[in-house]
Length: 204
Image 1 (cartoon, rainbow, N blue to C red):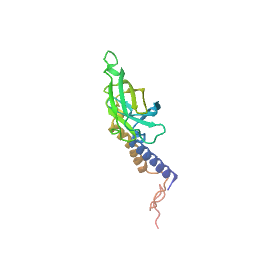
Image 2 (cartoon, rainbow, N blue to C red):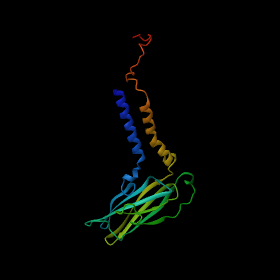
Image 3 (cartoon, rainbow, N blue to C red):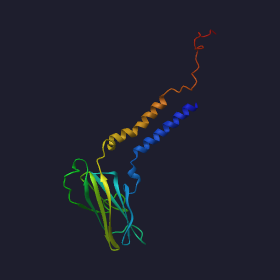
Image 4 (cartoon, rainbow, N blue to C red):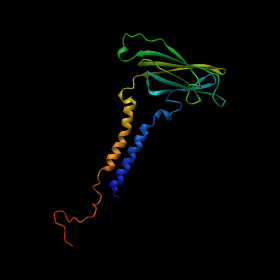
């Protein structure tokens, strides 16, 4: 096997690994779901971290997950009242000028709604593109508090469509198959009865 063939095989393996990486949703590798927005914010004896998913934020679906730890205690604090308040600060696109802002919305986060039982979570739709303020409040026997952060919601666009992402993920596999099927010019020709190029075969 020639060095060129080994190089092609290595390239094909690299393209295969790239395709596998593109097919694995990144959010499945990040906590209960998504991007860290607040980290270890003190609220009484509680330390609160907040994640959102998907990234970038879309107006049609948002998962807010809250990780709460109580100092000096193990396990997930039970019986907490966790609320998520969302408020549109600025419209985007065609509604950027002159459109009335919708009233703030409030959602309760519970452990039952979380994919991971260590979290409190809630899922809802923002309903509009633009700049949003999200406030998370926690209230329990060991204290209470709230903290806010801002996100910008926008439509996922063509590159965010599942079929387009699947096509992009499969493209390295197609390239790898084409690469491996190409004839390796460095490989020796198979032996046969042909004579030297330009000369007739020699009689035995």
